[in-house]
Length: 309
Image (cartoon, rainbow, N blue to C red; front, side):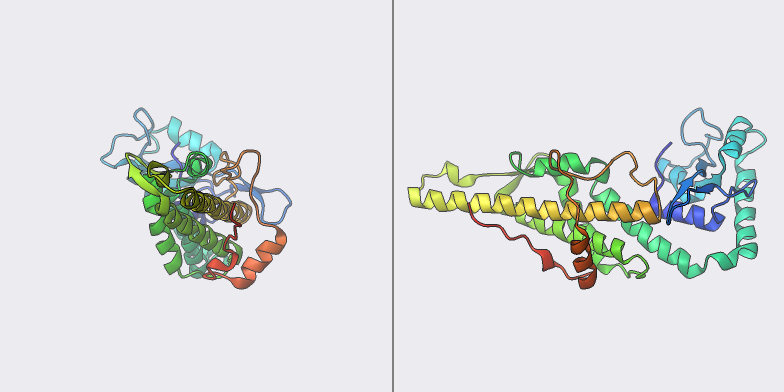
């Protein structure tokens, strides 16, 4: 089944109040821990996702099939029933069931979730979606590893998206209900944007990638000039590494917060982000406290400091 965008998940679960749209039973199981539950609900397609699936024939595009309007929140049992009995559960009947259930939630359970709650959830989920997609987070550990020594190679499809992500994060009107997530996403986008700008100092586009060039090696240099240029290059490489390390810490913080407080299934199979072998960069509690105190938009409060080789 195709992954669902975080904003679509928020709409689906929020408007269904975490209940199956057919039997109206709760589709989460609390496990006795704060901010933790096991999700049992399934984001079923109304118009089928793939050829041969129930109710597949439609003019809907793939993106339209995967979005909120073509999804219905169901318990596992009812999901099985509607797909095995597709003739009894045509598209029109499922849309009616979804609309009826959402109206029931609004009229009966509306006091449990305000419009502002839903708006705040959408703001956060949109920011998480943008970060996930623009940074290719499912492949982050692979492409970020290649950015650093000895490869110094940055995928252009990610490179060009980083500035766009930073602009989107900067203009986000944060609700303030998840300050740790806000700071984490702000830090990650800032550090990666700084890293990308730094990368341009010693790189050029070559096919699909930006590749770092130790350009001074192709030109005759005096020993003194070569030593300085070599020192400058390695300072650049080490500063780049620290920028990426800080960004990775922030992404791991965002992952920790979002999975604990909103969606325990977010990138569940990806694991912690790391471009380093055998090391997972994470903020300490003291670092988190300092960053939260500084807040969103503090920018270079933790700028890397690197000594020359």
